[in-house]
Image 1 (cartoon, rainbow, N blue to C red):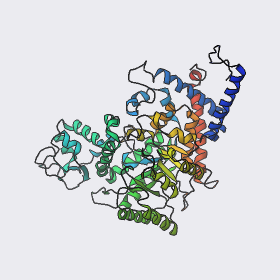
Image 2: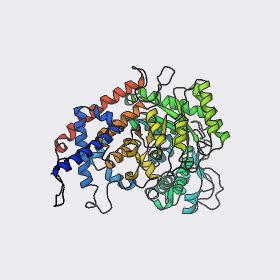
Image 3: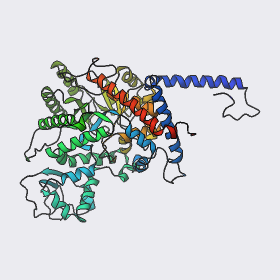
Image 4: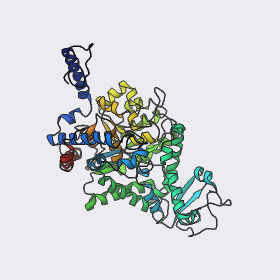
Amino acid sequence: MAANQNHEFTECSVPAAAMDQYLAQRQHMIDKEHSLRHDHAFRQRASPLAKRAARIVQNVRERELKTIWKHETRNDIFGGMSFSRARDTIHQTTLWKIVQRLPKGSLLHAHFEAMVDMPWLVDEAFKYPGLAIFSDKPLVDEHARASAFIEFQYVPDLASEVHHQLFEADYVPGSYVPLRQAARDFPGGDAAFKAYLLSRITITDEESTEYHSGIDDVWQKFASIFPVLNGIVFYEPIFRTMLRRTLEHLLLDGIQYIDLRIAFLFKWTRQSGEPGHVEDLIRTFQDVLESFQAAPEGRKLWGGRIIWTTLRSMPPAAIEASMKQCMALKKKYPAVIAGFDLVGQEGLGHTLLHHLPQLLWFRAACDGQGLDLPFFFHAGEVLGDGDAHDLNVVDAVLLGTKRIGHGYSLHKHPETMRRVRERGICVEVCPISNETLRLNASIMGHPLPAMLAHGVPTVLANDDPGVLGHGVTGSSHDFYQVIQAFQNVGLEGLGDIAETSVWFSAFHDGQGGPEAIGYEQGSPDGVRRRCVEDWRRQWEEFCSWVVAEYGEEWENTNQ
């Protein structure tokens, strides 16, 4: 920038040469910072077409920040506002249409139980007459309905109607009531009952913005959702339909591979209503995945695997039992089970250090038996600075985690962040989840830019989209939030994030062994490099589409 541009000179102003010298030093420092960013190499090798598309998208972003995300257009709107309140406006933007089309690579942080749009899941549950509901108390008023422990179970021999009503004072806690009867008996009828169920299995827009309530309150609601979902989700016919729907919708959103976390704490119910085993889930997952990939609509899917999870809040003996079960099933289904993780509210659950004896035993036992079961730890999903839970990010790295789930507090640990960068450990960032669960009130306060600026391999993920109010299964909302919020990201930054997700997917080579995770890993003709090349081809096609669709209107616009 020359000294005579955008500056107001007064009688105390310095000579232009001094200004030029300062501005040159300033630009040198900015260029140096940009060279340290994780997306620097991606930008350097970007094709002329991709750079042109990036300029167009930047113009779209800048114009919409001034014309849509401004107080002048509405009194309650601004750039970086909470996702739940911005969602409907997002869907009206040109930037949203572009982000939807972007090839997003792999989804590396998602919990199966919370993947689909919940209204669809509720409607699906009503298709099965044997599905029943029970409660630990009569649901006689709003307080009881909000606080009760409710659960679903498929009960094949249950009468279509029972004499006790869930919403009367004489209801016997724990008694099964057919789901359809419960809906019929509910005050307000079927529609009101479905609305009630949705309030129990989602974080509502109001709950997501009650910042005065704090993290523990929203997590209490969040944790209460999964026991309600389990009886529906892990009934075999619904599981099959839900998994296929998840895969279909991920492909529609530009996602071609998924590492899907499942908490192995459920009761599997076979189609007949008989109790099953967790192995039934793994077989069913494999069957649905293979049949979908063989179908015309699923041929673009690269694959999917399961990350075995259990609750960090469980006692050591229970953690050990889960580990042994995971290892046993890994031997039978090596291509399905990708790794191991501990989940649940990090700020209240046991730390990784608490479970250190079990984690070290697991690592040694897997190595001794030749089992490829790496850790993919949730870590740093907290606000603390130096407390025991914040230090989970340190232990995750020392324990050899291949990726870090969330890593929200990682930027507070310079040595740990350096090791993450140098060892090529990828951070799975879930911006909307972090906002909804009150780590930050706005995307503008998220630490993602610090990670990108320090060269940390980073991907975007949707975590629990069905529960957290996305309304869709894909991750376009998270991608949109990031490009809309952060000037330094841009289209090329999103491209780098998407390509990184392919490099860090837990691919299986299809020949009895895993593929090493990370940049430039895998054999030259292995699945990872084939998928990277496939993604790069789609990226260029996408950039070509951006130029063709929006170039005439947006390429030379004055911002």
